[in-house]
Each structure stands twice: as C-alpha cells, then as structure tokens.
Image (cartoon, rainbow, N blue to C red; front, side, top):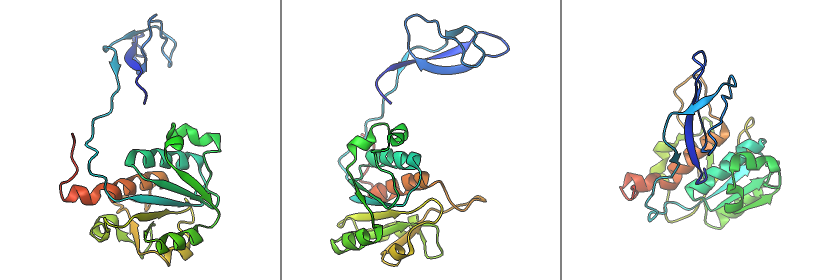
Length: 223
C-alpha cells in the first residue's frame, strides 16, 4: 500500500447503499460501481500507515528453496511475504517462474525487486550444497513424517541459517529432497481440508520460523 489518501463513499440510492473505498478526489463525482448512482463521502479522508515495529531482533536467517511451484500468483505472493518477513534469498528451482514473468508483479507488488533471488534447475542438488555449507534443511510438507511446526520450533537453531523447502502445489516436495532434510514440518489443520494454499502455508511458516523463537523468549515486541 502506498502513501495515497483514501475516502469511504456510499451510494445514495436507497435500493443499493453500496459502501466502498476509493482514492481521495477533488471533484467528488464518484459513481457507484454497483449501480452507477451518485455517491457521497461518509468518512473523513484518511491515509493508510503501517505500524512501527521494533526491528532490533532479527530472528533466524532464512533462505527458501521454491521447488517446481506452478503458479505465478503464488510465487508473487511468496516474494511479498519474503520481503515482509525479512528473508534473505529465494531460490527459484525447476519450473518455478521468475520475476521475468510480468504476472508475478500482480501479487508481488514490487517485492520482486527488493528480495534477492536466483534460478536453479535442480533443487535437490542445491539442497545438498546448502546443507554442506552449514544450512539447516527443513521442508514444509503435509506428510506422515512431518512434525507440527509448533512442536519442531524448539529444535530450530538460531546460530545456523535455515534453508526452507517448499514444493509443488499438487505433488509436494521432491522425495529426494525430503530424504536429505533435517526436519519435515507441517501446519496443523482442524477442518475438513488437509492442506492450505502453498503461498498461505509458506507465509505462516516463514513468520513462525523467522521470529517464533524470539517471541517465545520475549525478545520481539512492538515499538
């Protein structure tokens, strides 16, 4: 969200009364997007602003292996999450689209320019290399082998960087990578569905793994 000012308007037609936000305008002639009738401003002009967060606690350093993610929209959302959580690199592997694809910008909203990334054809070879270079290798996967992310969190070392593996929307993480992981984690599910959209699951996991241990010991707080 940018620093533009906004207003809340409402349709004056009694049978509609549609209420919606728009950018603040000087002429006041904003028609209802639902029925086309005249609208009026019903709340004072306001400006969106993000809360000030104390950045002193950095949390666990995380790089991500995105292996064969199909959807450009999922990848764009993952870039935006990576930017917000302060992840240091996205490794785009296999068929995972890169920011060279303009559709990624629809959900990344500029984060594709702020988050370092690289393209690698073989995620399994990359995982082996990163593990040899001192990374903890964890996979996010719905699997009988998986441990709840909350139960696994105490095992996450703050002194070594983490390589988090996220796999294909349908087929999951490559079994060759799973066999090399130090830990396989899953997000507990209480409904009838057994998994989340991959970008949403990644966002939950990214923040828990990046800051969860710091929250647990009380080092992270609002400014």
